[in-house]
Image (cartoon, rainbow, N blue to C red; front, side):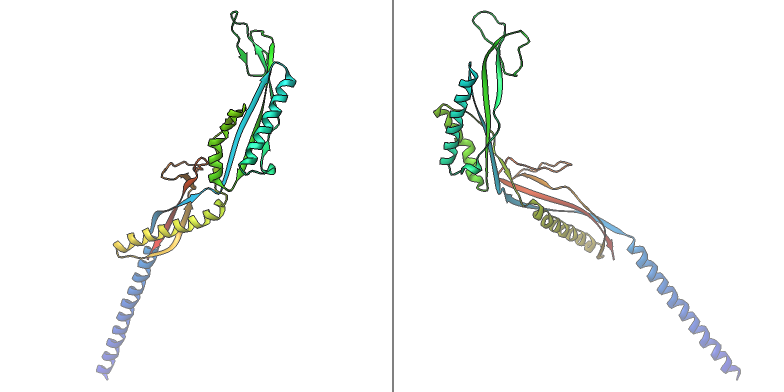
Length: 257
């Protein structure tokens, strides 16, 4: 009977000991998971894509001057006609050609030595007290088209109008990408995948696995001319090149399992 009681005590002791061991193991394992779960890895992901502008805008201006305002206006009207006909010949319909309001500048003669004239193009009377000697009338013109190569060519050839007596000035064309909103979503997705791949490589090298996302921050988009890599805190937005490269950057923190 006494032996039977001792055996019972031993059995209870063994069970309790096993219980403590198992409990300690569970607590230790749980703590390890909690502790590891608080560890994060932060990586930067990026993605780039080459794009081509899908809208071109060309702007230019022309002017004429004369001692008589009505004569200056008549000359400008003739220049306007020649500019319009030239653009029509290049395939631009009348409704695609936009002319600005006419700008008028009064030209004044400054008091200079005899035989020399100095014209003030500010439109205000010269500080030297010169009299009005003429008028300069100018007008701006612009066209836009999805045919960006055609716009590019126009910007370089339109000064041919000088041969027709038009005082033509051509500004550098602007080239835009109008679907940037949709592209941003795609680029953020690609940059995010790149960040995850980087995190997985780092975690794998230490025998760990990447868990859930703990923090995510998207950087500004950089749109540069192709083969350029300028960066701005506010984002680059190149409008001078046909061929462009858009770059997206994200910073993401992952938990470690």
